[in-house]
Amino acid sequence: MHKVPFFNYPHVFTAYASEFREAFEEVSKRGAFILQKEVDEFEAALAKQSGSRFALAVANGTDALVLAARAAGLGPGDEAIFCSHTFVATAEAIHLCGARPVPVECGADHLMDAAAVSEAITPKTKAIFVTQLNGRTADMDALGALVEKHKLVLIEDAAQGLGSKFKGKGAGTFGLAGTISFYPAKNLGALGDAGAILTQDEGFYETLRCMRDHGRNREGETVMWGMNSRMDNLQAAFLLKRIAHYDNIVAERRQWASLYQELLGGLSELVLPPPPSDGDHFDVYQNYEIEAERRDELKKHLADNGVGTIVQWGGRAVHQWEKLGLKASLPYTEKLFEKMLMLPMNNSLTREDVTYVCDKVREFYRG
Ligand SMILES: *Cc1c(COP(=O)(O)O)cnc(C)c1O
Image 1 (cartoon, helix red, strand yellow):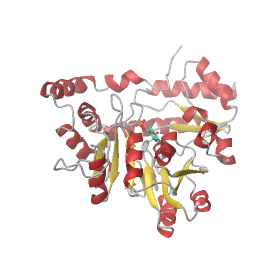
Image 2: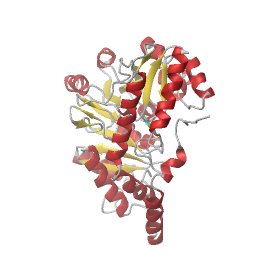
Image 3: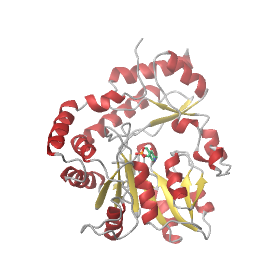
């Protein structure tokens, strides 16, 4: 049987094995493990790739969110609005600052719904955390207008959005801060955990730079409470190798999205993500998240035929994890979680793989 795993972790290494080996040798022989030139060089490359003025390398995408929330001054008594179709980390960052995470609905595009945000704003609302989910940037005109009108802080969880654009502007560069994850399964994957924060504000950047290294400034003086969230220099060296290929990585994913569209677009039982276009949204297809009738049966049929699929976040929106105590009812999002399914979308796929996945989907609905 032909097998198409949902994600091929060894490929994160094997795709550029010789470049990674070279980086490992070179950095290790120098003993250059913490905050060495590779971190600086990767930050510069990331700023260029994302169209950001500043980029700060940190230990992972969750720390990036926590640091951004803390540096933005979020604290007890504040509320921050987030879209419940996201990874728990978005809400976690708000909670860990002592603020209250307020979940809202997503729209038909699976991204934060500006109308829902508008309804959730109260005098206590301090920030909006928008997740640029699945490699697509939300409608930042509508959200930007709300931010301006209510004088809110905008933080983008762009963990899945590197290189994605709305009207030509990069994900992570719209608000006070944008956070990126280099978890191995992300578009730009490290060989372990890593993350980054983008910002256009120099003062905010300097604060974050201190915070990630125990509150120490460039002179080595401890000037605030911080933590250790430095990106390993080895991971920076690996990422520096991979980011040189990033335009190709994205182009390949867009090609798979086009092929999915071509082969599945005619099925009335499915709702597909919009195909690649030159319109307002430049999509980098971190995920290919469809809506499917009889989703669970389809998932099983694909598994029986060697095709791995995933329902994002373990099958529930953040507010549906009862132990977190968020106590919200979001009927649109809850309904969506009964239909959503992610088909394989990664850089180890071949044309044969995608064609096979689509054959099996069509076979399920057409017999
Ligand atoms: C991956 C991810 C994160 C967390 O990033 P880590 O690097 O794993 O800490 C946060 N938010 C979203 C939307 C993600 O997809």
